[in-house]
Length: 251
Image (tube, rainbow, N blue to C red):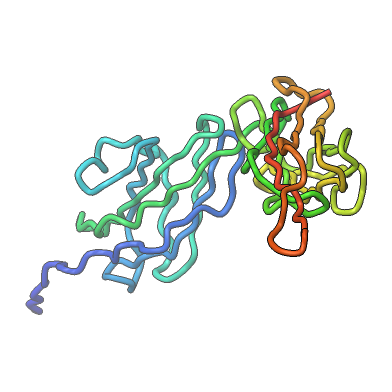
């Protein structure tokens, strides 16, 4: 007969350190990570415990977070693995973490906590001015910062690829060399353009428009100077500095 001595398993799966989001929709998130093994990174773990929350996750509150009821079966150690969380709130921040277990119940340490957000519905509803709307500049010179507008949906999520029109309506300035420009919003919902003030002291005005949006108002920037100031020596003059302000507009 043969006598075998079975050593108890003392090596737990490795802790995941690269949990990250790779895709999102208005109600779902997809995450990816490098799979731990049964013994550290070797072999194949038995199961996962994946939890998520709208509040930050720590070692102390991990067990109180929402449990994913049907996590994927672990792959071989070192392989990439994905999971999709569904039925989530629109444009909401979520925190996700996981642990891996071997067949004896040994648990890995808690993974890194991934922070990610679901998307909005992508339907533009609101136009607002963003950035610094209270700048000073000289006649005939470009303002230090661009004019910037933000387009969002009803959840406050930025909307990409929406047309925003900027138009000079007083002061004979220009927007990157043009009287009006139409700019598509970027991945953060922003559209922006430079503004060069007109050559004559006085009222300077630009209107920002986005068709079909609510909550906007006519926007303007006004020069607030009192005339050309005196320079130093030989009767020299300097250009007047003027203050600009903005309000949002939609039509």
